[in-house]
Length: 113
Image (cartoon, rainbow, N blue to C red; front, side, top):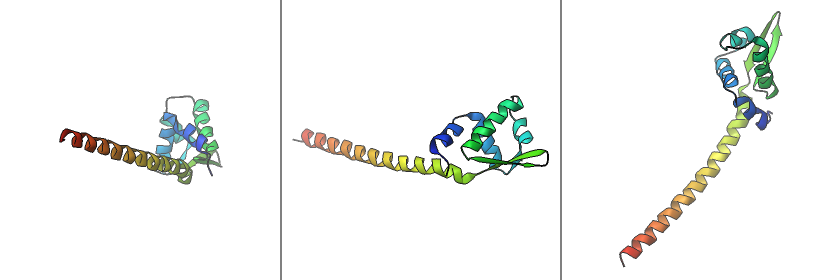
């Protein structure tokens, strides 16, 4: 299973997010992926290594070509954490809303006395 810190580190960079978006349509070669980014191939390969270390992407050599493929199950790690945090914050906001409504009702009751 992917490490959450590594996944978010990978997602923190625009180039890596763009590579993930490219790979969401299917496997691609390093050359095809790099072609869309304005950087030297060694710099681009550093991004691929980060994506591989976080287990978001796998690559394999086919002859002289290296193919990359997205591992969507690794994104589930981040999605699960985000969902959990969303539920926590929704509950907090619901409690805050109820508190504000209680204060408003008390204020209305004072105004009618």
